[in-house]
Amino acid sequence: MKRKIKLFEPSIGKDEENAIKRVLKSKFWASGAGTGKVLEFEKKFKKYVNSKNCIAVNSGTAALNLGLSIYDIKNKEVILPSLTFVATANAVIMNGGKPVFVDIDPYTLNIDTEKIENSISEKTKVILPVHFGGLSCDLDKINSLSKKYNLKIIEDAAHAAGANYKNKKIGSHGNAVCFSFHPIKNLAMPTGGLISINDKNHKKIQESLYAKRWCGITNRKNTNYDIKQIGNNYYMNEFSAAIGLVQLKKLDKLNTIRRKIARRYSQEIKINSKMQFDKHCSYHLYWILVKNRNEFQKRMNEHGIETGTHYKPIHTFSLYKSKIKLKNTENIGKKVVSIPCHTNLNEAEIGKIIRLTNKFS
Image (tube, rainbow, N blue to C red; front, side):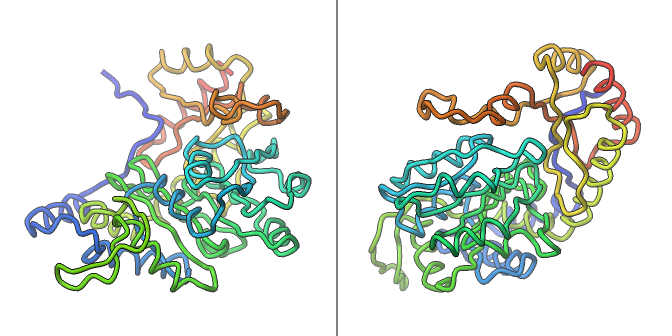
């Protein structure tokens, strides 16, 4: 029986297995203080993206929640796209802010930077771009708007570990950049996330976030400590950090493989509306637009190919439903399909995906 071609699949080997065994045998599995492998991962990721500070957490959602807590957004507005995972908008609400959705560019599926300015008001505090599929947004345009209106930039880089913008790693640009290391991500862990900080007050922010990720605990000496602010159990465990250190070493190599697959897709898939090739993209996923999505996904599944929908627009959910009209987002939200683009695919499987995509789309 042929194996099903999975939409996402982590790349693991003996190095990850050995890293887990070492942590298991050490009997030091987690620390709210973030010592051991967690601290080592923070330091090495900081060097990798060339940011001022890094704070490791237990998920991309935790990263967004803490990232938005850096700047008081209570009763303030945060500009973001609707075509993203709902955690992006949830984090805004959980911090007391109001999400303001802006339409997307139909060629990149990133937020349309030409439409951001019309949504800026006196209540706007943050621009929250999402690097969709691992393709960077136009950060120069977003940065110019942030300077013009004195706004903060918090990037959702859940798809963009190892991606670049103008030859600089994603993670070195915005005031805060939030990563996800979910098992299906380019840098995979059992569970994990991280916030890279580039704000001029990075040292003060780091101290605050270290407390917030561990129930607000600060000034800890032996068994004595203080609580100055509310916090949560957001710290990363040693197993995740140990795997993350191995994955970080090979991240660029794995992303190169993803780019090779994406190049073939962009050249050989005969659909006009598809993800274009960009050498700076990390290709967490590869998207296409099809007219009859349900039928297409059904046929692909019948032939052993798993596909996905990324994403249902957030502003169409009951919690977020409003009268706003986002033409591109709503149109693409009905047609977008993700096809497999991970490093475990072999040449025969890639050829099969291309052939059947052309046949059924």
